[in-house]
Length: 311
Image 1 (cartoon, rainbow, N blue to C red):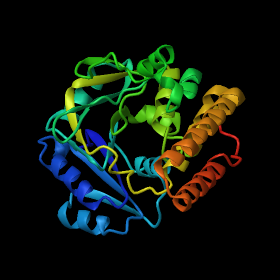
Image 2: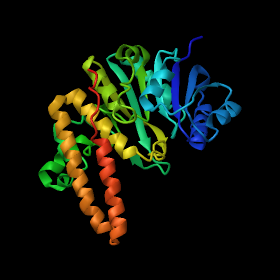
Image 3: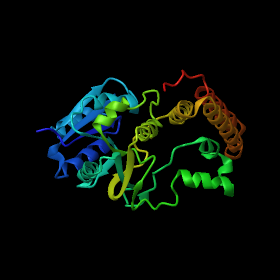
């Protein structure tokens, strides 16, 4: 009997979180019908051994180094065999019945290529994690000082769906990627994730390409998944640099040379903001100089030339 859904979890030094995630899956009555694949991205905390010792039903794929999110998901997905592929963060805990309900939705709605549930904090608070496509206006506003201006703050509010309470259902451009169900046939037609987007923006790019194929994406706010927000990326010392470079790659791919230029200039402006903020945060001249040298090095790495993005 073929599996109902292939659940793919990437783990990188998140041993306890990954074990909690798998325990949540084990408690779900639908679990015997699933294929669960855990790709260990070169963890050094004994994650793979601990998973194999406790969960004989989970298939563990071991990589000698951290491949990143896009490459890791692509490698893991090649081992999947079910009709549906669920990309599940290691720092999540799906409520019983959530995964099956997502599959049922796609069963009944062939015009939808993917769906995602509501994410909640461990204390039950909603994580408002849906977004629209990051366009050129967002490149100017997002994370910059002028997003506080009344007119431009509307762009920021629109991008983050701030008029949506995230409790109901609606079509979404960018659903939360921590628990994302897609038809495996479409995943394969898309070629999986763009591996140039090593950690960030790969899910945004995937959704945008899925929309371009004519498929819709549904946000299912009646279903919930606990998400320990940021835990799976918190260990990246160079996370800001990776985010900046992946962001520029995304803009070059979807908005061309002008989009790439615009987001680079926005990053430079952000750097000037930080330079000024360092002066306020560090009264000691030695600390201030060290922080500014670190910022300068970070910007130089982030703004270094990149290879041309694939179409």
